[in-house]
Amino acid sequence: METVEFRCTDLDDLDRIAGELIRMFPAKRIFTLSGPMGSGKTTFIQALCRQLKVVDVVNSPTFSIVNEYLTNEGNSVFHFDLYRLRKAEELLDIGYEDYFYSGDYCFIEWPELAADLIPDESVHLDIKVEDPGQERLITVGSLAV
Image 1 (spheres, rainbow, N blue to C red):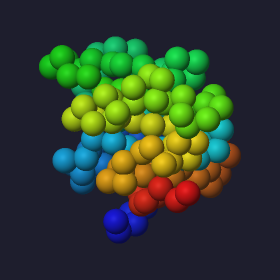
Image 2 (cartoon, rainbow, N blue to C red):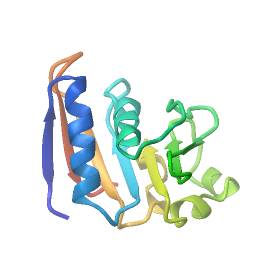
Image 3 (cartoon, rainbow, N blue to C red):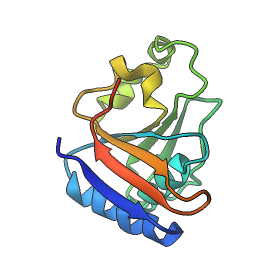
């Protein structure tokens, strides 16, 4: 996959970038997001969900591992936060394959913790904080393990 970069200088940029990503990858359904704590992974997933017309409140599923949201058309969107996984096999306990291969959108924070279980055809986003509190660099590429 060719590497693409987006510069995000404020929150208004997020919706534009999220819309571009959804249009760039119309057939892709699994997006992984990496970046340090506080880099804006959940905030960016909220922007992606706005583009998909999610009607539910979007927040981090830190303790439940996965949240399901519905779009205005009744489609499911799944949001994973793998930060608290002790081992990748914990995803087996929740039947991750049913989510990842459902054909529904899956957004996965902290994918490095279960990289072997994430399909190769996923779109990977890496968020780097360039200017604390403001500017972010979002790189689209492959998940590095």
